Length: 637
Image (cartoon, rainbow, N blue to C red; front, side, top):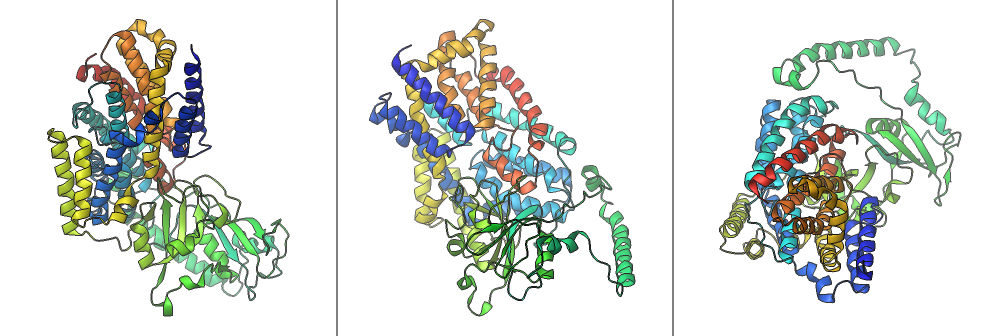
């Protein structure tokens, strides 16, 4: 083992550690890898920068723009709204998954899922179905639909580019399709059965936009006329947990409560009469007791915090709370507390526009990730005020505007309809809710769909290389005014582009230094005695495990050189091994952090971490077994 090999393996191990621990964003890690290879002399400057001119990198960027043409025109919105009219829950689930699987074969699946999430939540609420039975299948179907074409996922394009870098023949646009369609069919059958038994029933959401599920971190201000002044924090929350009886209204209150209970019991049978509904939702599920509102801390002027137990409140104190939103609102109204009016100039002149509450989720690739609301001047930038912040299964203990945002965080914003419309056009966030959704621009939708179809035909027939067809498609969208130039630039997820460009040179270094051969001989070589089929199974399993704990593109870059070296050592064609890497890296079901769409539905659906391995791990095992048997049949050794 020479010095170059040791240095390459050191960079490889460091990259794996940083990708898994997520101490740094994946794009920063990729650039750090690139810089390390260049400084250590493991690649030439031209090779270090070759990732930026790679066909995979450019094609992925172009596909983001082509997807944005459909999304901005409202075409995807129209498809989702049509789907939402289906009343039968099993038919809705089937058509939803088939639709998202087909779309994900040709457009960016993150964009498609971002459009579908609010519509699925609204449709399930209107049909009295729990959204938790549908959102994980939405994410999974988008993933296994993407493996059917070369442009379905960035991972497929990346594997294709890495193969071409080694002088091998690349894949055709639809070369994955025969095998991918089988995976889609098996995945759909599994999800149609398993979702009823392995997914939690988290209840039916409310159709109106005033009901905000989950527990939020919120911040309330004590004004000078509030009855909370000079009261202790404990006394402030006590009425929330132990309401004092009103001797005058006791009889009336009891009568009202009894009447409400009687009305609810009378209405319950009507809600459960539909046979399809009862198939997915138990007739009577006791609602878990609501956890009490928690006072995290009291923030005094000057930024000083005080213990929140017996502290007497003063004018100007800020109460940091964690609880259900109706609890926060009840406390605010009862004690005449205020939200922080950070920027009065955000109010429209004369108050013409009504202010609304909406939930806004931080999307993959959002510029908000890793930054605080205060640091980005979020209110002034987006013309909204943030009243609450929700992060799944985590109790945040710092002021709302000082929390570094993460993928899947949900912001409860106070905004006007015009500012919400602007947020819906922002690819960095997803507005959860169906209020005043953008209408379909028929002209732009038809042009965008026609351009995408032309790109697919030109690339699939061999008239043009994929990268050339994709670039021409992007130019056509801008020239035909389906996208403005600024919108085209904003549509590209530059984190993915930088990730691809940064890690591609690592594959070159592994090949040149002999690192891939060494890893193949020592890690997978022991299996070569059992034949190429067992080796393929091991490569698929290795990629699948790595994809659950790091970026799928990073996992592919690290395993592809090893797969090629293993094929060469066995004297067989490398193509089946490359297919195994592409399929395994593009289908991550066992964790909510293994794939971007998983993280999106994890937050929106209110799932627990354990919900994903419960339904996703069996699907991973099924796909692993299918890949071991079927890949050699479609791609012989």
